[in-house]
Image (tube, rainbow, N blue to C red; front, side):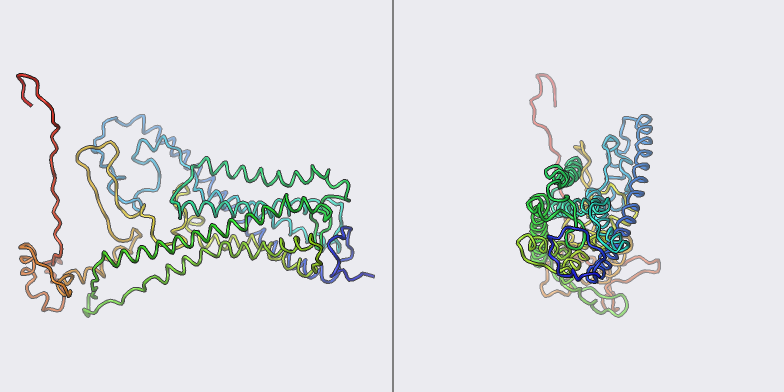
Length: 503
């Protein structure tokens, strides 16, 4: 006859058969959520693997083509340094690197750093989900059997899965902090070294437990029944603390602090941006094309505030899923009894890390993960998250070609680079173009050219519209509010002419 072990202390490390009702009900929930995490994480990992393989093949073919073109191309720059890459903003250029730039052909392209970290986080989530999915074995056998391969594998995967998941979540938090707050992108080799170092550290902590205890030779085994599943023997509570939970608590603290710093930084930048816009921008009225009525004003910054607050989802979900089980284990180490129902609930939460990570990162970094854009893009994925536009790398302001001293060109393009949005915005602003400056409270002195243009407009103001279109669709007149003059100075190098010669 089975006894009720729903309140059995964790120091009972022997096999438990048959499963009590509390164990059976709790392990069913843990197994289902672990299976969901395992499947979702594996599917996304396979998708990213195929995507990375295709990208590497494409890059290899591109490098082969570039090497052939580099040998056949002339050394004379017939475009005078004004190639297509200098005349178009980054969002409208071909995403393939090295199309026109011979220097980029020698620069190796690398996958996006955030994508690399998320890829390894999925591997860690598979470790963690696989550990709790093994609870289905105990349900099938109607008992938790110690000293079996399944029990040892579950204990090993719990140790490596929990710690690796925490490590890579913290690594992503550090990278986000550097990108958003410090505006710094670490070298690619540093990211790869961090990934390798974290995996080595993770397996080293688990291996040290096996080595130092000789696989639990003095305590009845290292991985035995610990409440509702197999994990480190309660007799080795020091190893539990220093080889596992100490690092998880450090990870919880660092992740929360870093994302809080990101949130505060974005909030501060938003306030500075709005304060600068109020000081530098003169209020104007936009009119519709048909009824000549002002367009409704846009909401000030509610969307930005929501997007900034959404950054707090990362540490919030991580804390809610990881902290309950950690606190439960620490409580039992202190000698306080914790019921099995608590461990099963905490196990269900930590087993949900995988599918919640897939959902969270898939929604907030969907452009980086699911779109067909270049994997080697240097974007951090923050723009797909909806952060305020503090990164002006895609603003359409080009730079002077490297090595050019004369004949430089600067092209500033306003508006959104996304296809269709710029045309919509221009269509809304075009209607109010003729009225800007003429209906303001403060009037400026007009130049002669402005007065001439005003007379050219004729009766357009009285016709109910700021512009009058001709039969061929051309604009008769445009009211100018500001005239900008550019002065070009020729600089002559000062030097002394030799005797008998002229400069």
